[in-house]
Structures are given as C-alpha cells and as structure tokens.
Image (cartoon, rainbow, N blue to C red):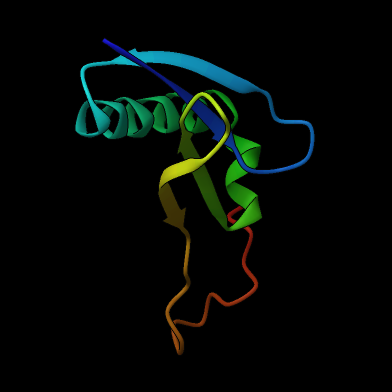
Length: 83
C-alpha cells in the first residue's frame, strides 16, 4: 500500500491521508470521496465546479478529479439556483 493525500481545493481545506494500492486505486477512492462529500455538503454544489487533488507525501499533485455543473446555452435556466 502507498500513502496518498486528498486535498479538496478551496480555502481552509484539509489534506486527508489515504492508503491505496497505486494511483489508479487512489483515483477511484478520490471519486468515491468526492461523491460522499457532495452528498453531505449539498450547498457546496452551488459553487459550480469542484476539484479534488491527489497528492504524494511532499504535496506534489499527481492527478485532479474535476466535476463541473454547466447549464446549456439556450436552456432558459441560466442563472437558476435550483431553489
């Protein structure tokens, strides 16, 4: 097992240690973590996009998991907040 760290981008976000078999396994764990985070912090989705970095022990980014919410042009819902 190797040690990786997840860092959800944004001010004051902590670095979370995770053990994984390799980078592919760490990426899959990052996707699961981000899904759980968004489920328990629904207001975070209002920010429009999210980036979770997978880093090594010295803080070097190894990969980014990015999710974006985009309203299609001409959909008539531009600016809608869903409330």
